[in-house]
Amino acid sequence: MPLFSTGDDPGASFPELLRRVGLGPAQPTGNASDLMHELGVPHATTCVALTYADGVVMAGDRRATAGNLIAHRRMEKVVEADRHSAVAIAGAAGPAMEMIRLFQLQLEHYEKVEGAPISLEGKANQLSMMVRGNLQAAMMGMVVVPIFGGYDLRRGCGRLWDYDATGGRYEERDYVATGSGSLHAGTVVKVGFRQDLSRDDAVDLATRALWEAADADSATGGPDVLRGIYPVMATIDVDGWNRLGDDELAARYETIVDEVRAR
Amino acid sequence: MSMPFYVAPEQMMKDRADFARKGISRGRALVAVRYTDGIVIVAENASETLRKVSEIYDRIAFAGVGKYNEFDQLRVAGVRAADLKGYQYSRDDVDARSLANSYAQMLGTIFTHENKPMEVEILVAEVGLEPAGDQMFHILYDGTVVDQRDHAAIGGDAESISARLADSWTDGLDRSAAIGVGRAALAGPDREIPVGDLEVADLSRSNGRRCFHRLAHADLA
Image 1 (cartoon, chains in turn yellow, purple):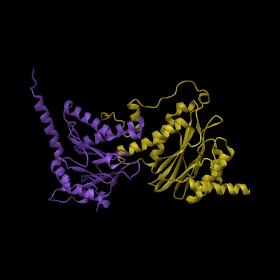
Image 2: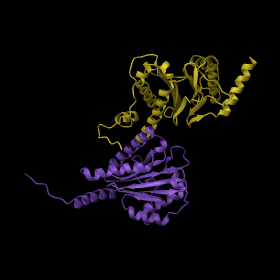
Image 3: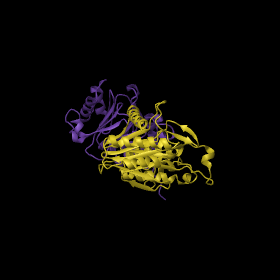
Image 4: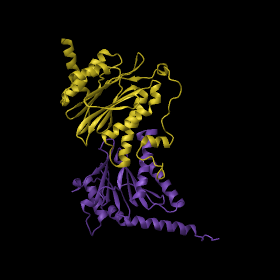
């Protein structure tokens, strides 16, 4: 059982605790190269997020690619970080998933040690530090770029942040997209975005954004009717995380398919 | 040159135990009571902010009596141990028995090796997937571990509280009945504890992944 003397205590930080007990992350060493290509490391792709009247919508496709191959069809890139926040992640799948796991643990660890959850802005800062901690790996091609979104209980609104590979943290007022299909997805959201959208309209916009991204970007997965795989789509409002069911997404995509067919 | 006085080991241990017991008996007690859906922990605690009962892990709760800074140090150590184990292995591998053993080792070492023993008694409770898996471990200041099944009382006057619990506990209590049993046992026959002086938390099987849940005073009235 870890016990630390006063003044030498890692406090409520779980990553710091990991370092103290010798379980800190291994940093890759060596020259920057096309290591990623040789290893065939899977990449997670497109995620979008936007604010609406009562909170935020976050969505991500399910595909991971390694080069020109589909590595996974059921990846979940949008993950509940805690009750009132979520992370959507694009980039090298291995480090990305590990980062999400560590981030979730950190939020819960802090909450238990301190007896109160971190503020939403504090969570965004924590994630920024984790992305920065991955800089060495990022320079070797294992870039991880998350989106962080959640409902700010103190301010009573949904908020969004996006990050760059160096841990740069930028708060976005309206919407953000990341990953290989972000250009297409982002444009769809940009054109359709209005302030104070309803939940239904916001979900509809995110659904269309992912559809267009999958239509134009080979690394983004579209709705897979054959296997029943649909994007992960969730809203976060004052009551917390709420993921949409596959049935609802199937119906929404059917509508889009009908519209495209009639074009 | 001054010579240290010889103190017999028996006497030394007895002195330390007396010292720890005296510190613990000054504080107020708490009880844990098993009910149909889990375990409820009822503590007499006048403070709204300094907690005696808290969450360690998905299915594990911690409760401490005695010196606040000492049991809070143990609580944080428990959260760290559990989170580390869950990270290294899996969430399913974190269990109360192993945590109780670690606490026992730590308290035992402090009792014999440090200048003063910790003036605390702690309780580690785990709610199982089925009622048969519910466990409670009562750990004393010297590292003694007692495992308890249906109910436990720790702190000052724990013996008579335990006796009252044994009289009034029955199988198949619901949560509010279990809280009532715990509250009455804590109070004894001559007084009633006002709701404002109660700290109640619950480990409930039907609470999702994180079973721990604090009850507000409004829920108790």
